[in-house]
Image 1 (cartoon, rainbow, N blue to C red):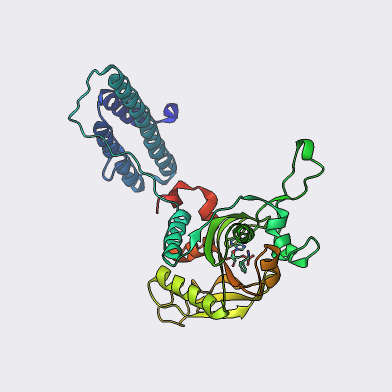
Image 2 (cartoon, rainbow, N blue to C red):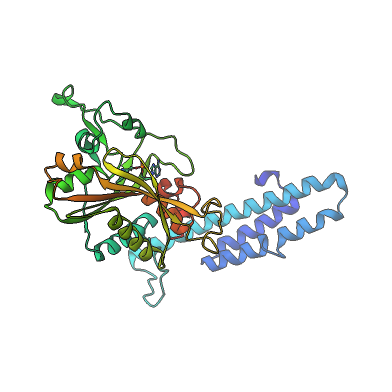
Length: 354
Ligand code: FA5
């Protein structure tokens, strides 16, 4: 790069190199950078002079000034690395160690937005008497489907494009029943097996579907399941629980509406929508709710009596309600994130905003 510089530019570069070699701190290097690449610096002066040159010389002059800028940036980087290496070597020997110098604060991580919202929801539900449960991500077909009233040939399986696990070794041909759970509803069955009614549980967790990914669909996303089983529960209790939880999340009363929804493990089943909390006035419509003034929040319903019976719960005595919150979508709503792919993408520029 340097060989293509004109004699005048080479002179500037050599002067900068001499100053960089003599530099003993980052502050010295920043001063050189300011003098050459900064506002009013050498490169800015060269660029400012271009209009005064004959037209045929302007292109070369512009390119030359940019090459000089790049060459100086490269030599400053090189010198910065040398100074850092020297400082590390000195620190190792203890020579030149000045205990009174302040050290830069180490970069600190922060909670992932999904973790923050999950913890917040766990606190809210715990304060409402719910227990937080966990379940395996690699799950049995029977928990993910069969015992939720979704037998092998049921069309509802098409709603979940499933990642099936290949088992190797001795069980290779006999085990065709392992999958990555497609929803957190499988933990409903585990809860019913383990707990005696009455009980209330929530289950946050990662779920997996073989989906085409776009701004609102991921193959790996988070849900939070809720299940309450007790005597005398009705749809009124379900709506009450949802409204209480929304009031806590958005710190004000949020109107909800139920639309019919079909899920084989609840009857009746609903889609619960919330009045968009981001509209400037309730009902006004905005970008978040795509001008409908409602946001789809979570499917829910009364636990199907057959599902209770399959897990040994007396369905004459007990009823239950369940909901399956799209946690990733709630995180997006909460922070107004317009593309779900940011959540699992691992991009530091996105994550450092939280
Ligand atoms: C279910 O998964 C049911 N298990 C929910 C349920 C639980 C119904 C209890 C009744 C009782 P669904 O497939 O609609 O339902 O997913 C639930 C929520 O997960 C959706 O409302 C949506 O917010 C979220 N979701 C679904 N697919 C994706 C995806 N690919 N990416 C991100 N979020 C998704």
